[in-house]
Image (tube, rainbow, N blue to C red):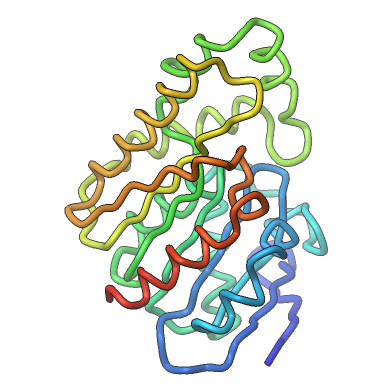
Length: 241
C-alpha cells in the first residue's frame, strides 16, 4: 500500500507518503538531511516497507511541500513534523530514522515527544558540537564550502541555532538507539575520520540502550553506499522493541 498526501499544518501544506502493509508494528518515520527531502530514502524504502509502515515527508520549502514562514530551526521543524503526523493520523509509537541534519531533528523529537518514540536510528547525523570541535580540523576551503551550503533551507545562523537547541535539550532518553557512522567520508584525512567516528560514538551517551556501527565502505549517504546496513539496523530495532 502506498498513500501520498498533502497535509495542511499551521502555515503550510507538507507532502508525505505512507508505504507499507500495516502489520501492527511501530511506524518508521524517516527524516532526510539538510536540503534533502523524501527522495533521499529511495534506495532503502522498498525493503524497509516490508518490515513495517514507513512515513517519509518533505520538510517545508523542499520537494513537493510548500514553504513555511516559521523559522527554519530544528525546534520549528520538529513541531511541524508532530503536526503533520497528527493531521495525517499516523499513530505512535514511532521509530525515528534521521540522516545528517535529520538526525538533529529526530533527536530533538525524541526528547520533546518522548512518549511517542520507541526507537531512534541516527544515520551519520550531525553532532551538536560539530562546529566547535570538528569543523576546525578540516582544511580552510572545505570549511568555507560547508558554510556556503546553507541556502536551500534555513541559513547558517538557523543551523547553528538548531545545534544549540539540541545541546540545551540534551538528556538521557529511555529508548533503544542505533548510531551509524560513515567510515569512508569524502575529503576526510585519517585524523578527521577517526575524530568523526569518535564523535558519533559519543552520541550513544544519550541512551542507556545504544549500539554503534561503522559503515566501513560508506561516505555520508550510507543509505546509498551500503543500504543493507540501514535495513538491518531498522530490522534489529523492530526486533528489539
